[in-house]
Amino acid sequence: MNHTLRSEKLVAAGVHSFTSLGVVLGFMALRSILHSDPSGALLWLGVAMVVDGLDGPMARHFRISEKLPHVDGAVLDKVIDYLTYALIPAIFLYYFELIPAGWGIAAAAVVLMTSLYSFANRELKTRDNFFDGFPATWNLVILGFYLLGSGPVLNGVVVVLCGVLTFFPVKFIHPFRVKSMRPVTIVMTIMWALVTVHLITRRGAGTDLFQEEPAALLFFSIVSCYFIVLSIIRSVRGRL
Image 1: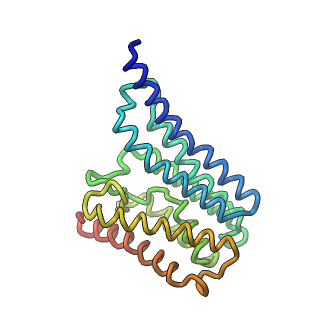
Image 2: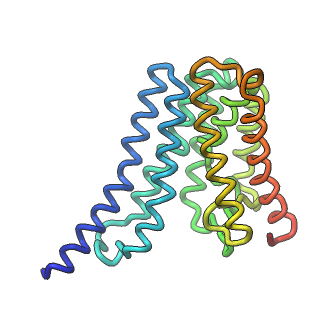
Image 3: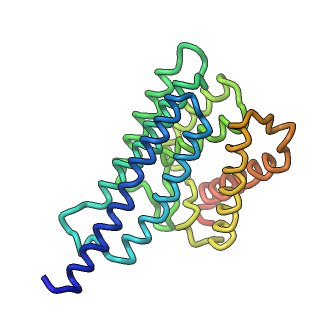
């Protein structure tokens, strides 16, 4: 094996190792849940999302499927994503009793079972890189529940609705891969992420966000609606 090929294989292995950090971050999120620290769990899941957002472009840039063909990066990514996007959020819902009493296991079952379909769906993305159906981003759903302090009944309705939308051709935007309005969407995503970290930290410190962080909470809500509106436009018009 020549030096160049060896170096390329090492880089490819490094990218896979970077992807694999997601499972450790997921474990840390689970640990935070078991220590009754919802803010910590959401922050760890947030870092896992950053890793998930970076590893794909890295893998494509370094063409790691060619360098280490015996390792299926897509499968590796899906295993980790199921943990951080579905399993741990389901545990979060159940552990922190965000669903009406007696319905926690049923809600967790909706999250876990519908997510299996999303991850097994070979046609989850459209040609313009929208998700076709709810893409099992349950970490974002529980984030909204936590920051907005929504009630158990409303939370239960949202869980059922998202579960149902998994099987319907409603489009959901991918903030980085959809080309239409990409520069604006990326800037909005970064700003949303920074504000979200601030709000999670403040909420974890016992702050009443509606009283002490109304501007930040309003920004979080407006940008979240921005993504929802773009998704609705794409679903109705067939293009953005």
